[in-house]
Length: 134
Image 1 (cartoon, rainbow, N blue to C red):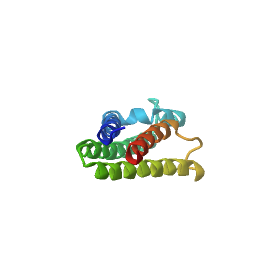
Image 2: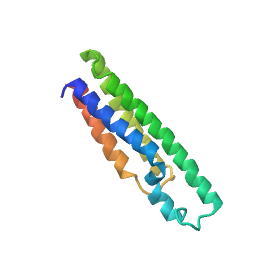
Image 3: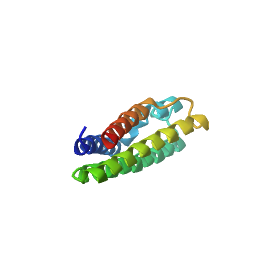
Image 4: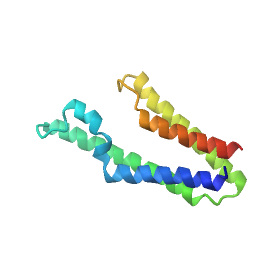
């Protein structure tokens, strides 16, 4: 796979994730908060505050995803060696991100592994390593 195409794919996925996380941050957390009972109209003020705080964190995470997506798209025309270094760096970063997600389970912060980001980051890291090392 050509480096510029890989950077465009990775940048597009990350940018889309960042836009959606900023557009509807609460929707990303509906399942978790629904089990806590914070989604109903009878939610306490404390639960509503917690929901808003989590939504704000989701917006920040979405902003970081959008930033990385912009960096990947903007740098898609780098010389081959530089593009390969960027792709490998992003691949390592995605693996670190997956490790941090798993650490939340190991440390007892959550009782189940969150699958969608693991799948997304696995695919993105595979694309990065494939294009960066071939």
